[in-house]
Structures are given as structure tokens and as C-alpha cells.
Image (cartoon, rainbow, N blue to C red; front, side, top):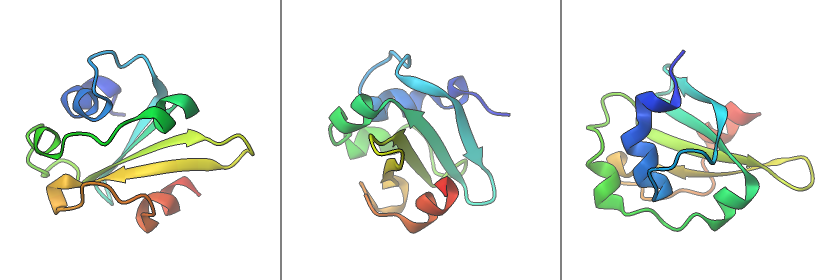
Length: 104
């Protein structure tokens, strides 16, 4: 299985910090859909600002994954998520069907 360290440049840019401590393992890479799924605390996800698209695109060439799903537990037991895919022209898509299907 892949680890957080395998994607550290992208995750550091996305989270705006070199401290990856807010990440909750496991981080999941879904090769069939080329999505990286990252679990965060609810506060970390809620407070995350819009990441810089150009800097995020510069972290890799989209050959390894096409998007990042950030997810966190919601207060009511459900999950919340945000999806970023600037490598495909989508800075952020908060209602991404393929990302939510992975979480279901």
C-alpha cells in the first residue's frame, strides 16, 4: 500500500503546510480511478483554504493520479469531502460523484 510520504509534495501544497500531522491514516490510492483519498480531522477539512491551483498542478504531471479527495467525519456520523483536480482543469469540485462513490 502507498503511504502519505509517497504523495507528500502534493499533500503539503494542498494543505498549505509541511506538517502532515493532521492526516489520518490510512491514505488510500485507488489505482482504478486514479484518485487519492485522504482522511482529515473535521476541523482541518473545514478550515482548509482554497489551495493555489498553479502550485498544486506543479506537484506532479497527473500521470499518477487525476484528483485528490479530502474527507472527514461529520458531526452526524456522515462524511464530508472536497475534491481537487487542477490537473484536469477542476480547481475544486465539492460535489464529485466518483469521490463520493469511493466513500460510500
